[in-house]
Image (cartoon, rainbow over all chains, first blue to last red; front, top):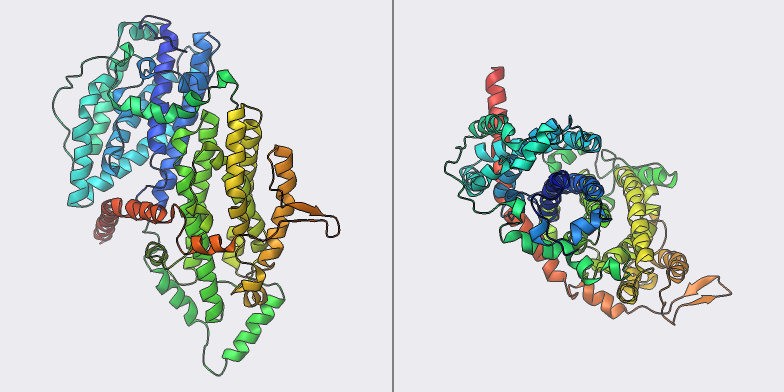
Length: 261
Length: 338
């Protein structure tokens, strides 16, 4: 594909692409847990989460491809863009590390994703509203799973409390990005297509504070000091290596050269 | 997840056994009654009397089966991140998830015979228990994942369909569910290969290479030849096994070769249809290789066990936390009730 999307280019497409990329990248991260989980039951849970998220990504990327109008498929968008053209939040591309970090990441993100999808069910983009209505049921389970594990680890042993706290402390710097509302997103929100991310912050904070308190954990402090924006194609170093794995076969044996998968 | 019944599997089985009168005098009568029930195609259930040998054989076979499912997640799981399309990725995740489910289901079925999952896993990691030798071969290209679906799961189905009528009830019922899912695994693998054969020369080469490496090991999945099988005759009598290794192997070859021809891969020259028997002759397998792999000689044998050990060790603090939390919850519930 080779193109680099400009921030102002087709905002409706870029918005849906952002939703899709979050689901795709986080789904890819959950897939990495397969056969490495702390119990067999958690291997099964991890694969469910991965399946839900990749399924959401597939539907959202199909919709994004339609909005883009350049004849691409969902697979083209997933497999043939370089990091610069990915629009996911930095949080979801962070490595799994241990079960504590993975759980902290899932709690922060699934609470946010739930708020987002809940608002988008009313989107004037009927196709998007349909996709998120289905996904909302899945994410409702994801946030429950993450909340239960946050509490279990927070209240479990001294070690588990420290490990999950470490997860939140490490990842908290990626929180402000979740609520950044760029001007074109505000315009889309005014048109009833999108939800302005900033409007979700209060509800998210209330929920996350409640859960962390119940888990005997402290809400991390400090500013993000994040330089660069996903909307301009900026990412952490981890996305590149994630894409190496994700895209390897399509890059080595391109569909455009006759490969059939 | 561990809180529904706090008795250990050993305790459960011991309690189950208590209902059954067992003295030296009536053992013969019990065994005769047991065999009569099997001869009449009745299921043996966990609380029923059974000879120790029957129990031991089943625990060995079911745990070996469970271990194979769990170890089998490794060579396929490592391709989830690299699956070539979103559809293939979702299928593969679902398949690996099924395998975890089969493992869990089979460990639970084995627990009904009085050995806990923790003990069975300990045996696996200590090298005391076996798993299917096929998973000691590496998956070096994407086609291997598809070929595992077609040949390895295909061989597993051939082995397991007769087990749906195995005399031990929990195992037989587990097999009904497992076989349905294995059938999906086989079809998705074969379908993925058919697609690749429509693609580029590089893809076709990948499929042929994969077939060449996995075909013979998949035939070895049926175990040693009948002339050299340690457990067969007693297991037949107990209806833990209904067909011999060689019978099942032949059945698999007869079903697979036409599929290979339809797919368009070149099958080994040694395989020819025998006009007299109407079966495919396939010569002698390399039993030296089989025995070497059984003894841990496969390329991946130590990697597989190391990977399982690492998952278990890395997860210790999580399991400890879950247990500590469950205990605290229980104490809180009791305190609230008082």
